[in-house]
Amino acid sequence: MKILLCCAGGFSTNMLMQNMKKVVKQSEKLNESDFDFTAIPADSLEGIVENWDIVLVGPQIAHKIDFIHSVIDPLDIPCAVIDKDVYGQMDGATVMKLALVTYKKHQLSKQK
Image 1 (cartoon, rainbow, N blue to C red):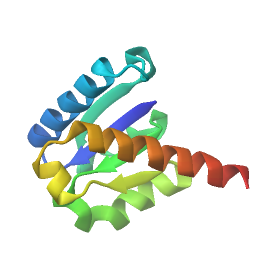
Image 2: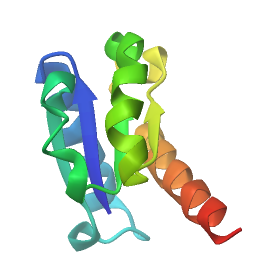
Image 3: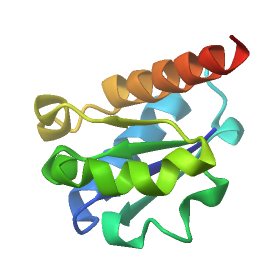
């Protein structure tokens, strides 16, 4: 699964991404080779997002969600906004769960 984290500048989201990688590495159920992560500024989304499975949006740019949807909806890529408290705690496990659940729900909705 290719997970694209979208934020304002990239520094704090990069830290969160590292915590997500640790969660995958330490997991008995998840395989590191099944995941790819990148953190980018929201303004760079166009032209980069095409090959990603899900977009996770930092709470500090939730106001840009309409722009983000305008880019990803035609590509049928799901997205979720990360809760500000979860983001503030840099809780990689909860964000990984958010990514997996959002992606699975999207896949199931396509089957209907």
